[in-house]
Amino acid sequence: MSSVRALKNTVLEVPWIGAVAQSIWRCFKDPYLDPIGRKIADRFSKWQKLTIVQIGANDGTRFDPIHVLLKNRHRWAALFVEPIPMVYEKLVENYGRSSRFKFECSAVSDVAGSFSFYHLSPEARSVARQWHEYFDLVGSLDRAHVVKALADEAENLDKYILETKVPVITLKMLLDKWGVDQIDVLVVDAEGYDWKIVTQAIEMGLRPEVILFEHSNLNPEEKSDVFRLLESDYHVDDVGIDFLCMSREAK
Image 1 (cartoon, rainbow, N blue to C red):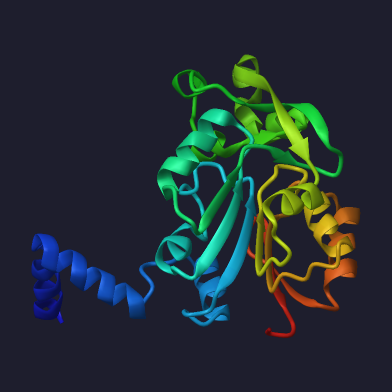
Image 2 (image 1 turned 90 degrees about the horizontal axis):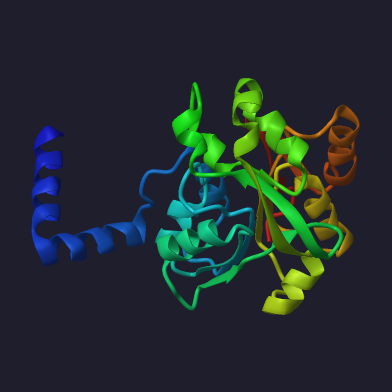
């Protein structure tokens, strides 16, 4: 086995041959996926044409369960939403301009307008007693959710919470703007607004085959609403801080 691995590594190191070999390899096998990414990958044929909507995409890479899939499965198209301009620019850079990808620099909620969005300044990293990588991903229309996410560092980092005015649109406005009439996979990380966004999708009659959204900010009553609204159509799996919802009927 070690000799096979050594041969593979040798081939990959040859400039153009390595690139071609790797491309061919990825046509038949996904690269490493985390457990959530693997469950999503196993749901679909590798050659299916899909539309993914990711709200709260951040930079598109860190702690992102679908990044590798989107880079590897070339029949998957995606609409990414990220409200913070400097993070949005990084998102576009990480994915690159492609006809498969659309980018929206807005926040999504149930009410449209221009609202304050709260997130940490880059300086916060240097003054935190203990920095957690997920701090870079924390951002919300509700300042209280940012404070809650910072936990023991909240008091220390409070003055480093920035307020940025961002455009806010509803899910319907987002989909109408980009001409999206079907969602196969909906991924939401909106720090406290996740369930509101998923509810909009359900009320619009959309039935994505896979829905992934954060539940750590939901109260017990809201969690009950999740199962009441989704359990007839979806298997709802608690996968840490997220609910992974798989349609009971494969399309």
